[in-house]
Length: 297
Ligand SMILES: [Zn+2]
Image (cartoon, rainbow, N blue to C red; front, side, top):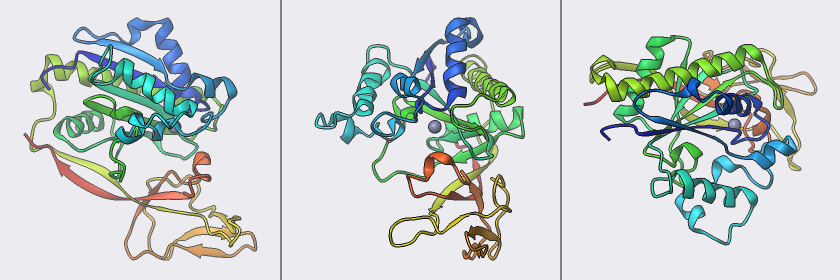
């Protein structure tokens, strides 16, 4: 793509993630904060009903409703499936106001600091990653695992997209320091889009190496036959997102006080550790591996 003409900043894809909701509300009150010369910026509260109810979603997870098969399946009539269709009809590639680049702002109860999740690792995404890492080395870059259903997430409605995850913050809570970190990160992404349009020679060039975490596999909690939890995330692992986990390191603590170790055979870097929203998804944590990629021409 030659130029980014429209950027969409989304908050409240999950209604109880207040950071993104209040950041979008702030930008709606003060649009100049998200204005850049070379493109127009749009903002959206993606799941307003869930936010009203103080819940992640009304019927189903909105951020799993964007695969083409589901969008075209009109038998899927949950609030979120209908909402996904509305969003695509407005901002999707063939919509009324198609956007070129979507920034979906989330928060997490895991200690993931400022994380940018890349939807793919094409040269645009890797340039964005290198730009952000250079602007702030504390920013973590996470490459998401390909989904068997194809495009699934809200940030896939446009040609380019990324997801912002900042934590640890509880659901339904605002943390001013993390709010500011989220705002800084979104601003840096907007600055990247502006440079992409106006000063591409200033962006990281092909051949530049990008260090990232590659999403690998998930680990569920130990459970009994009835699906009840048998253990909790081990205190040593709690809030240790992105820290190396070696074979034999503590992973879970049973209610009897026994430690259960990580039994893999390679060093991994867990993320989304004890994420509150993932108990229902049977995910205690997600394992990643470090990886270096090179920007291609
Ligand atoms: Zn979320």
